[in-house]
Image 1 (cartoon, rainbow, N blue to C red):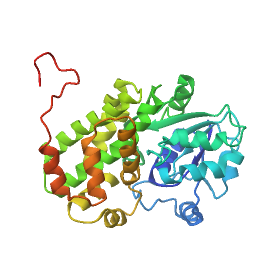
Image 2: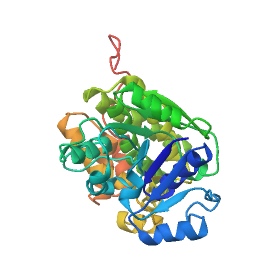
Image 3: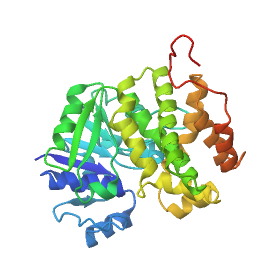
Length: 343
């Protein structure tokens, strides 16, 4: 049995906490929201995970020191916008050599950092965290299903394969089958940008388009993500694995997806702000979109769906007009290196 600390008591943090507790570990959960900890401790229920009865053995705390100290594994499960602040606040209690797992999916606007890079940059400021190891955990895993023990598969990514294997082993005896990958940048890039594509898929559904449109959007959306990833030095195989096409499929099609739901509402005529408010939880695709636009410009990669999404979200064009513009683009070949004579 390992002692595991989880920073963040949202749906994903609590689903993972439940899986790890049931897998035989001693889990402690922290939240910056004191009332959230009080509610979970008292009711053993999460309001957004009605099917999950929180294990009576799971511990809760309002103190960062308690969740960080003496743990074999620390999971950062706060929304991407709060990762930097949480890392800065927790740094004083994180020992050097700590194995940290980030499960938030996003890119930081301005720095264009992935979430493990954000955590690393904050810990580096202390000058005493040179041996900390960071793993990204990402894949097609809705919290609502993991919380009730449905079989799922996910990827633990780290340039240090031994660290990824330690995370893999921690999830033995849970509903999660974990694969390892050394391409941490590729895995995190997929996790962030698939949310943008899921927003686009939701918009298409909101406009009344069907399965053909969704399938085309998913396929061409992953082509854009992979094109950017190759330019950034990522491994091609990552984009066609669980953290790539797998996560995009589930996020762009599931009723559990916040991004898909927000996109649907935008397609129905709501503003992005109104859609996010109605969803009631963080819509990561809206936060990742500015970084996606910046990365496309920085690496000179053509990403027409990302560009169209930026126009829609900033209301420079309407959703239906954006779809028509995408359909009317210059004719292309599907192959990156077409045979001689191909178009």
